[in-house]
Length: 95
Ligand SMILES: [Ca+2]
Ligand SMILES: [Ca+2]
Image 1 (cartoon, rainbow, N blue to C red):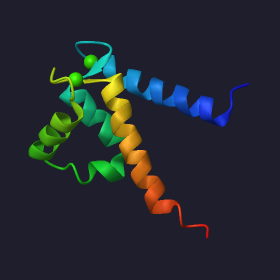
Image 2: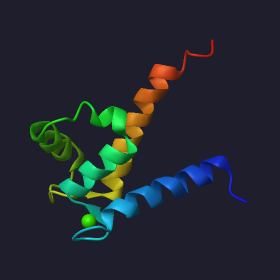
Image 3: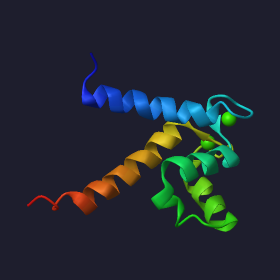
């Protein structure tokens, strides 16, 4: 029996792998895979990444090791940032 947090962590790993395995390096997201992941899994966010230039600049900001792909560590940094923003947005909702 997994806890909610354990399930959430396993889900994030599974989602990353689902897209990272599609092309090229199985453990990294190339730009097209990142685009598909955002499109399918973060559609609200993807609405603001609606052209190639925005996608290019997002990949550039995620890609801290400069290999033009997004590895799991880079992906987690991105998810952490997005999640903190969501928390900032929703934290006062129930007060
Ligand atoms: Ca890949
Ligand atoms: Ca990288």
